[in-house]
Image (cartoon, rainbow, N blue to C red; front, side, top):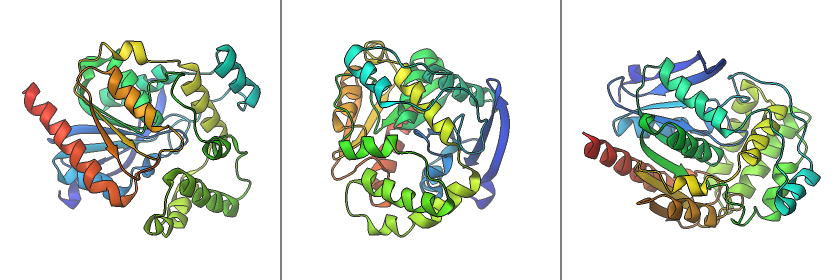
Length: 306
């Protein structure tokens, strides 16, 4: 990949909001959209991860979801309460939400429209995997292949997060930059679910970069409501015809391994790659396996479609 093939972050109007995006790779390469998870900015798709995918022959597009980073911040929706979660889990009383995953799926398609992309390979992590599934369900003609990473179907029978991961999700937002940087390191230590000193050494710098782009705790709350209010996709996923790869860590504390298995079982012909020792994160030591699998899957799907 040429250095000139990297386009710095830009903002475009799509689906009625501003979306900040960044492109790695050549204009004539296979388009591949990276969709990030709950409360995570596009830079959580590490620069090196994007560059390696671009070097495999993809035009890699990462972007900030609504309510995060440099994309539009919306309004409405109160902080989620434990009582609402209890009502949802035990009484099936829906959580109220200013928007749902389908709206975020429309953001993704709107971005593709703005960039002149008819169809793309979608790679989504966690909530991003749910959004990618929703795009595949609602706009199948726009998806060349689907890769769902550390995500799930919304099936309420999938085991909930570990107590430690759930507590992290519900913790009040940090009140200072120093507290944010400390919390960032603690959070990712829980999510990685193992010893990753090479990642921990980079966490303070990553936290600084996230903080500099701007935080939006209320937006993270609205995203969480969107996930919980969108219900299960399991039955609808039975009708998916898009080539699908599911990647999941064997020790994921947030979206349990059963979530990945449920996704793969729900989509006809889906391939499941369980990565031993991986939690709810994409540490560098697993990149060769993850990037290799995405490369093989997406290029294989493109070859069949040609």
